[in-house]
Length: 396
Image 1: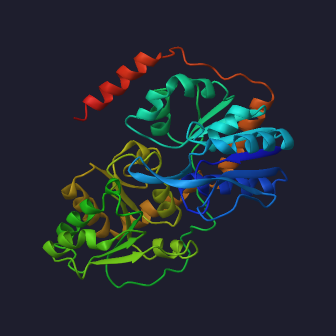
Image 2: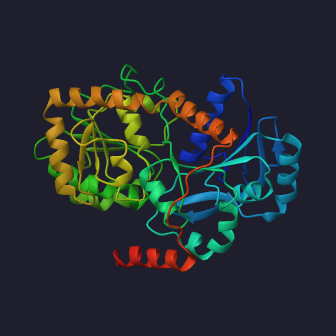
């Protein structure tokens, strides 16, 4: 099978969508399929084609969903995308965030193959979809198959573009993240781990720091490891006010090969996100590493972790509830072992070979011409507007 993966995001920067593509690509190449990847190029790079990765259109940073997306906004690569598709004659064109500017839109516009779109993001409302729906709807209609990585992502896209979506989640590298990975260091103190871009308010680090003040009452020597990019100075006031100078260590970004060793170095992993998380990939990394999880009770996390089985879910933006859960897990070694073992078993259901086979089976179904069931209700543009406004009004 000849497969083209299309990413809207600069491949020089790590991210969930690009990681997803890379893992599917690797699994299919192992199985003998011919795969290629189309993505934007970084500023300063030239357009290139190394026979596998094709880089077209310079990426620029654009604020998106509480983060920064590096995408190309140039329509001038349209002819090159059209020529690539005509020349290669792919069986499957798999577009990730297929309605995002600009490469997925151009590939979908020119494709004559079976088109599959995977929707990753979860947003309360998407004004881009709403305002451009008359045009985006024409592109959406060219998708033969549609995948959502979680119920939260499905709800987000179906609000604007109803229809049938296959639910196929993100995967986890269960060979890389394992309980027997030697820890980066053995800390002789209770250790909590946070992983993520902690400058983003939606990641919820401030609530974890506020919870840590309360945890210290039971565990005065508790240590919080913060792994990921960001500016620690933004949290100096919280740390000083809580006298947490000896309890918090900002590690910064770490090489991919070292990240598993940080998971196995902790006693409990904490993800205090406030929302806008369509899928809990960091939860899966911790679970695959055999570590118990304390996380916010948000829809993207509930899809991955079951409360009381692989970890504990607590009310978001609630430092007191977070502290109670952390103390409960840190105080009970038997509970940590039980949650950790259950987490590893759960993570194996999300291994990349499993996810790749499910996606491949979906391709084959579409290639056989099996039609997807359509939603009974097709919302018009004004109905979508009313849905978005109701969602927005509930939050103001």
